[in-house]
Image (cartoon, rainbow, N blue to C red):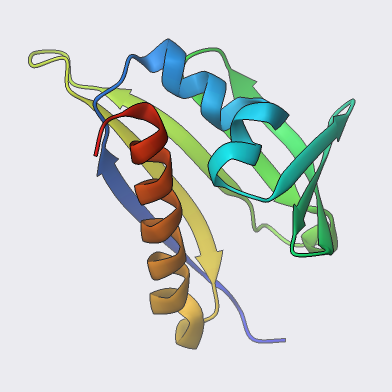
Length: 128
């Protein structure tokens, strides 16, 4: 299997960190922009897209700050994805930082997917 490379993206979002955190950390919030449906049981989240299911394990979370998942199928790898809320100390501007992994030839596709999903999130938040 080809090794995946880490990539990061930053999206300015006009919303309070606590509101944004609800959309990145709860099944109901994630269902509105990330997947068609999301269920959680303990530390496991099930993401459903057009009938296919992917399970992820919640690795860590910090209220109003970040949440980090690992796909169950990547369990024996160092790969994860993280959504982190960053607030500029001076301007108080809020950004959503995405960290993800993809194979070389899939990074651009991954970035486009995140672009589309974050665009949906911004519309829901009224931040577009």
